[in-house]
Image (tube, rainbow, N blue to C red; front, top):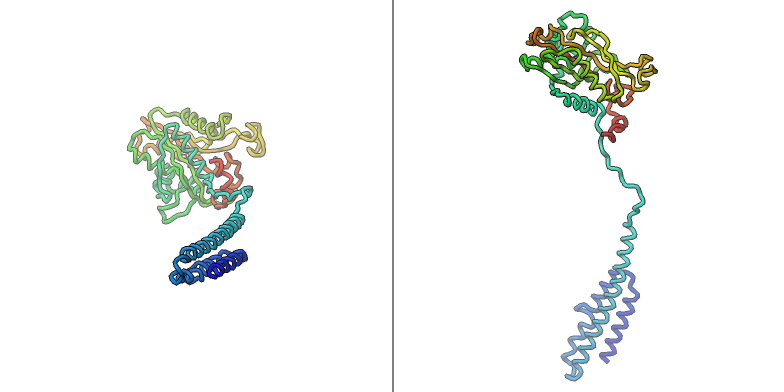
Length: 345
Ligand code: DAH
């Protein structure tokens, strides 16, 4: 009788297990058929009422029934779990043929790249890097460079004045005076890259803010040959071994003689083209032998010392080097412009 009941319970359980469609149902069935309050569990308490010879087999039958139901539930659960896992894997599958996300890497403005390159070239020739303020006094920006008040050459360098004696420096040349002051009569070999400002109409080749690299060498027996050799080496390192330079006479109040330095046009190699306006040359900087007045005013005896100086327009060099056609591009922070140079550096 009792065994029949057990068989019935097992059959019922197996049917329900078979019919189950989700794992939760099985957990419930486990509770119904194997839990403390299940029929099989309550039948266990009947063992005590049975005659001794039946006790053992009845107990074994209940145990066997529970075991069977449990095994079937676990089997089916394992099937559900595997199905669940497969579905999850299918959903999370990665298409490795898709292109990856490009990591966003910033790029340096070519303006800074070129300053580093120019600096490297001059460091290689034994120059030191000097610095000076962008808000400068009339004294350093003009007076100590042989540009007294009312000197006509000041007209070319109108700038932004903070008060009558304080201005945004118009060139990096005041660093010449500041360095001579600091070196107190000792030899000098410096460059100074930095920002400069002028009142100017902004167009493709002019900007109210631009930058220069100043150079100054003072020692005994310095002559114009040293200036030429230094700038020739610079031009070849910056623009290529084939570049030649040409010195043209010019005027700057702080140098005598003064020169303007041209390089052979990279585009036509000196034959003449539209880039060099048919001349075969492109101007890159101004320079000259330091004027005796400048030496004297800044504590050097012009009978014992001589020197040369130069000022290079940084944007001009970068524009020639990279083929950039508008100076304003350096300052407008257009990432499309800047990124073109990022990969090279
Ligand atoms: N300061 C000049 C300018 O801005 C450039 C220059 C010319 C600098 C000759 C020099 C130099 O040191 O010797 O136009």
